[in-house]
Amino acid sequence: MVTGTKLGLYGLVSHDPESLVPLVVNGPMHKFKPQMLVQRHSLSWKKRLIRVCCVRKTRRKRLRPIVTLYRKMPLKAISRLWGRFNQIELPIFLRKPLLGLYIWMFGCNLDEAEIEDLRHYKNLGEFFRRELKSHVRPIDDDHVLTSPADGKILYYGKVENGILEQVKGVTYSLRGFLGPQTWHGAQANDINHMSDYEYQQQLELNPDNDLFHCIIYLAPGDYHRFHSPTHWNVVHRRHFPGELLSVNPGVARWIQGLFNFNERAVYTGKWEHGFFSMCAVGATNVGSIKIYCDEDLETNTHHKHQDGVYFDKTFSSAVDVPKGSMFGEFNLGSTLVLIFEAPKGFDFKIHEGKKIKYGEPLGTSP
Image 1 (tube, one colour):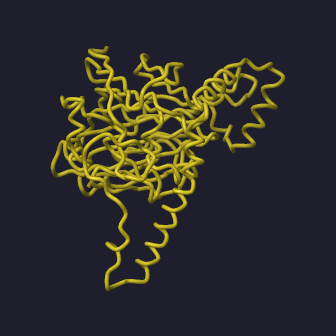
Image 2 (cartoon, rainbow, N blue to C red):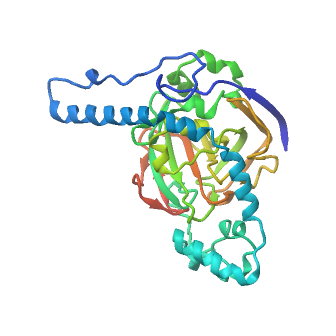
Image 3 (cartoon, rainbow, N blue to C red):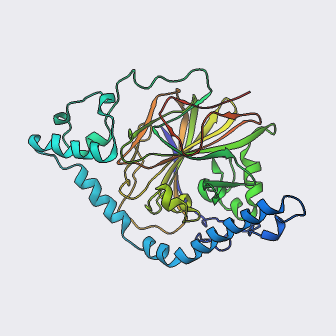
């Protein structure tokens, strides 16, 4: 049930004046200042920190022409062609060798699949979206938040001043990622008159809470469906028909604001501690994002859109999503971003760069 579907337009946001993200909103911009780090004490390690940060920034400057050229590639068209290729029905005699090659290349665990006989998968797409046996992913009930997918933890932590990290040391803007908070009754142009810090303060419903985030990267060999990480209610969806740049961690290290460029479907609502959001981010060859409670969502279409365009859908009644229930699926692999409000003592049970499986604990409240 939908009470309203509407179009919005706003500028992509960055807090870095030298990043590739166009900035058309007001608010303070923060530039790295090495002299602010250098103090009388602990001088040696701080000098090393400055050197590392400056080297990373210099490398990103050198890569700028390459990144600009990369962004001009027809990645959405390539992804649509890949999607069509994935749906081509394979002759039965080719299914086992071709899918077996894919399993070998990307390290898929076929023993966990509900259907282990490769001849039953008509095409690559069916294999990507394969279901798992019910007992191989028990949902942890001792922790309030569990992993929504199989993947790798790219980054996690507390959101500070409206800025998030896509990988360590490379950031993107919260307000650029989520857009205007119209689900709270705010006006679309309100985003033009607030800083990143003010945006975060408006998002938090409880002054005793903090805002946290977690990024999970799904590799091509991972299980491609994703599940609800907690019991929550979905009230709103925002679809940004952006680009389809690779979200591989190697690329994410060098493209500032990568997640604000890419096509994504942001689902917002509430859980027991306040604001909760789960976002499915598209990527190269992953233009198709399917959400089971949202049949209206269409991704990677042929239409061209201006930067900052988004499409809203408001559910007439909140969609109740139980913990562990299937929420959606990708083709090939991509990224999930969780942004949520929780008590200040929220404790993550994960480690950056480590693999995780859906249903395993992400964190718990005090």
